[in-house]
Length: 337
Image 1: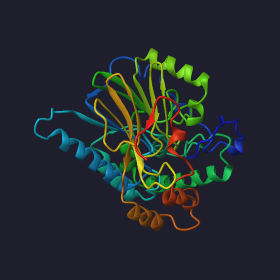
Image 2 (image 1 turned 120 degrees about the vertical axis):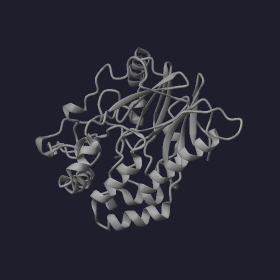
Image 3 (image 1 turned 30 degrees about the vertical axis):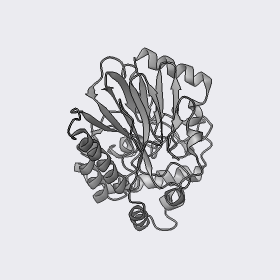
Image 4 (image 1 turned 90 degrees about the vertical axis):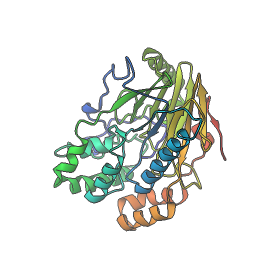
């Protein structure tokens, strides 16, 4: 889901699919207010798995390693929470792959992304994948995304028991990490498929002011999002905002790993970039999945000329034309090179 420095334009009636957010994507103004829904010592936020089973295995290993470290003699007992904040599916394509991802992730807290929001509908409503792509994304890319989504939608149409897994999945949650409140959603604080936490939007002073006021109003120390498929992070006066980009895709040139967000009182030794606010370390941690196995799996599902191959294979193999320093918009530092 490419990101660019543009606002969504008003589409023509022939151009709506993939360009707009349905009205039921709206996030209630009180969604992030009040006490946190969960309490933990270490929080992982996983956005944009995109159906990559090898990334999910790597995330399981990350959590297992965290638990093993906490169980070492002399270590305090800690509570670890993991939240998947949407677009857990995308490249999985088949009902069998979808079911495997759902089963493996069921032990975690699962939020809805636009991919799942459209998959769980009884029938399409004309918005395609629900990505709400900005106007600068070309129509061919949008059409391919709609096709990718429709193939999985068609697969699930005859499997109501799988669609049922997505029903009632919330769009937001809040987590207290060492007493500090973290808000989590898919797109931005207003819409499930919103782009206002993209790198380009977060670079705008007016947007920064509005977002800072939102953090202050809701007593949030951190807002964690995803959706745009491009990592971004910024420190504002009242809190930190971090978008992990993608857990199931490379985020930077020449790299073969995804990213998840980790929030805790202690830093992670493998963090790629991060910042500290009060007692919390907020970091992007690599998801070091089996790259060769992933490419083989992807190629078997998405042969040459298929919509996913055209849009994504280059990124999977070589990473996007993007670099870590471009994602850091102020207050965050690169930790590994």
